[in-house]
Amino acid sequence: MTPGDWILFAVVSVLATNHVLIRLPGWQQRAWLFWLVQLLNMSAAGVLLLEGLPGFSGNLSVVNYVLALLFVVRAVQNNNRWGRRGQDGRQSDEADERKAAILAALRRGEAPDGDIPGAQSDPSSGADA
Image 1 (cartoon, helix red, strand yellow):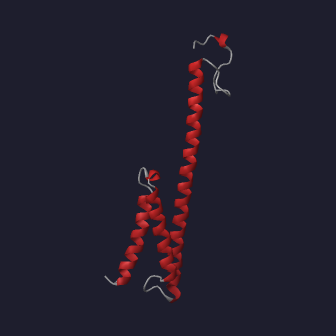
Image 2 (spheres, rainbow, N blue to C red; image 1 turned 135 degrees about the vertical axis):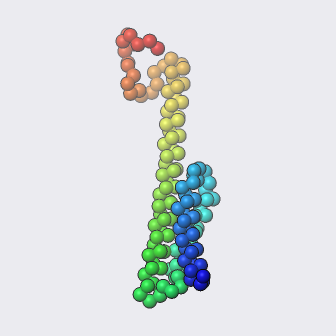
């Protein structure tokens, strides 16, 4: 294999690594993995823009720009996925706090703050507690 083939193989390997590592279960708990993949993405994009792939010059240099853009798009997608992970964590924390408050109120025999969907407010309706 020529050096150009090895470089093209490295580009494909970085794309495959990017695709697989972010989809591993529990990647949200490994910030180092996220930042490693982001560093790989941006480094590959920079190298492709500055150096390019051997054999893709002249009219074929657009291939370098397209591959660099692909790495940048992957970095943005990963950032969106990382951001959603943070929002989901905050939403689940709020839901957990709400559940704990309702459970504590029920144990005390009080009505929790706010209405519970489907709950009957009239104790004489015949439902046993």
